[in-house]
Length: 233
Ligand code: ADP
Ligand code: MG
Image 1 (cartoon, rainbow, N blue to C red):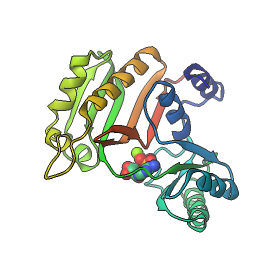
Image 2 (spheres, protein in one colour):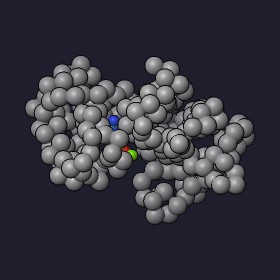
Image 3 (cartoon, rainbow, N blue to C red):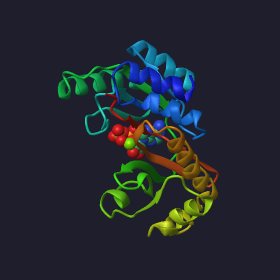
Image 4 (cartoon, protein in one colour):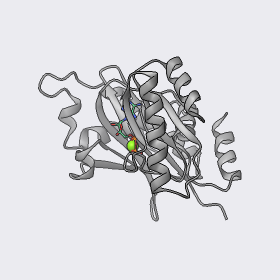
C-alpha cells in the first residue's frame, strides 16, 4: 500500500490513531528503516510468523485503542522458542482484556528482536504558531527525566538536522562513550530529513513518534512507531 492508501484506509474506518504496524508501514514507504513487523491474528499465526522471521522475537499488542503498549503489559521481548511465543500471546491478551475491556484488538504484532543500540527518538507535534515541529533526543530517561531534546520547525534543511543532533547534551554518547562504538550520525541526520519530508508532504499527520530508534555504527532502525492523524470533521 502507498502512503496515501494507508492514511485513507484509517480515515475511512473513522480512526485517527494508527496501529504500530500501520505506522511502521507508512514510515517504511517514506524511506525510514523500521523493524520488519507482521500482524498475527491468532496464537497459531503468531507462532508460525515468528518461526518464519527467526528468533529471538518480540510480541506486542496490536490495537489502536492501546497507545502505551508496555505500560499495559502489551510488550514481550526476547522470545526464543515457539512455546515462549505462545505463552506471550496468551499473557498479552489476558493483560490487555483486563485493563482495556473495551479495546478493539486486531491481534499481536510479531517482529524480530533488534540488536541493542543507542536509543534515540524522533518526534513531531504541531505548534499553534509554527506548525509541525520535529524533536530529537536520546531515548529512555534522558528524554523523560532530563528533557535533553532539540527542536526544529518543518521543513528542515540539512544544516538543521546536523545542528539538532549536536545540540543535545547527550551528544558525546553518540560519538562513542567509554569504548562504545560511535553511532552513524550522518545516517541519523538523513533519518531526521526523511521524517521532515514525510511530515511536510502529509499534512493530515497530527503527531508522530519514533520511540525508540536503535542507532548503530552502521545505520539505525525504528523499533516502535506511533502516528496520529488530524481529526476529520
Ligand atoms: P511502547 O508502546 O510502550 O512505547 P515499544 O514498542 O516502544 O512500546 O516497546 C517498549 C520497549 O521495548 C522499547 O522502548 C524497546 O526498548 C523495546 N523494544 C520494542 N520493540 C523491540 C524490538 N523489535 N527489538 C528490540 N527491542 C524492542
Ligand atoms: Mg515506544
